[in-house]
Length: 207
Length: 219
Image 1 (cartoon, each protein chain N blue to C red):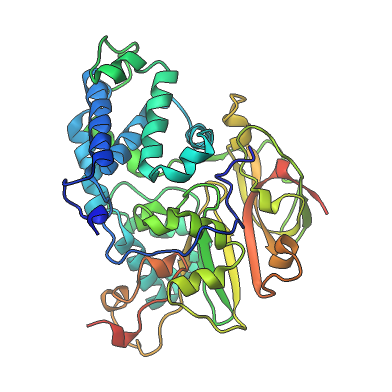
Image 2: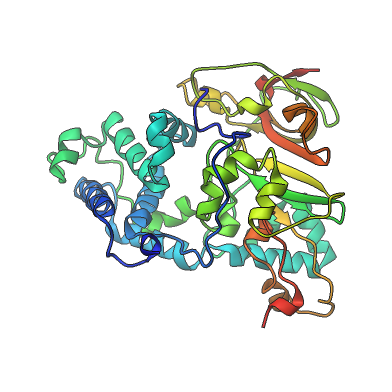
C-alpha cells in the first residue's frame, strides 16, 4: 500500500501538502513564533515516548496490585502520574473496568477525543467515520470488524467522549496468567483493548 | 451546529478498517502539522473548542473527503490569519513578509514542550451547587444552536440517568462564542440504547455522553 509507506515518495496531492505545510512552518519560524527544533522534539516524543506502552504498564499494575487497581478506578489521573514519560498525565482521565457482565468501549462521535497522555496519538480507525458513527448504535458490528465477538448476554457500555474527560478501559486479566510479572502482563495489553475495540492477547498468543 | 461532524448513529460509512502496525504518522507533513498544532497552543490565541468549531465550519464536502491532518492544517492556517498572527499574502509567498505583530509571543522552544504534551485542565470552581445528583432521571434538551455545542444530535430530547459528576468545567458552547469560560457542572448521563434508537436497538447496550448542566432538565 503505497499510501501507507512511510517514505517520502508520495503522490502529487501529498507533495503539495508537504510544500504547503513547509511554507507555513517557514512563516512561523521566520516570524519568531516557533523553533524548528521544538517541532522536531514534539514529533520525536509522539513517535517514541508517548504511546500505548504507558497505558499497558498501568493496566498490568492494576492486574497485579489490588490497591493500585482501586486507585486507578478512583482517580486515574493521579494513579497514572508516575507512568507518564513526559510531563505528567493531564486531568480528567477516567478508567472504566470490564467485567464478565459488562464490556466498555470508548468513542468520540463529534471529533477525535482520545486518552492521548496514556495511549499516544489515536490510530486512524479511531478517527474514522465508520467507527465514530456506528459505535454508539451497533457496537457489536464494530467489534466484528476487529474480529471480536462477545457473548450475547454481555452488556456493552459505550462512553462517548463529548467533553474533556478521557476514558481508558481496564480490560479483564486473561486466564492462565497467574504469577506473571507486570512486564509479562504488559505484553498482553494491546492499544485496542484499552479502547474496548479489542480484548487482551491470551497467554498462548505471545512468544 | 447540526453539522456533518456530528456522526453518532449515521449509517453508510462502511467497515472499520484497523491497520496492523500502523505508524504514528503516515507522512512527514502530518507530523509537522501535529507538532505545529501543539506548539501554537502556548500562544493561547484560541481555545480547544474554537479549534474544534473551526473544523466543524468546513464545508461538508471538505470535511468528508480531506485527510484528518489536512483539516488540522487548514484550521491552523485560517485561525492564524484570522487572529492576525500571519497574513494571507505571507501564505501565498511561503515566507514572512513583515515582523510579528506581537513579538512578546514566542518563540516556542524546546523548553516549552512539557506544557503542550500534557493536556490542560478544564476544571473550574463551580458557579453554584450541582442541580442534579447521581441517579437522577434527566432529559436532554431539544436544542439546535447554529454555534458550537457538545450535545450530539442522537442524544437530544432523550431520557437518561445521571451516573457521574465531574465538577464544573469550561463550557464549550460559551467559550467558543466569545462569552468566556462560563463554567458549568459536567455529568456522565447514561441512556438505554432503545431510548436512543428505538425498540429494535440492542437491549444489552447502554451509551453515555458527557453532558453539561445547561443541556439537561429533570425528566
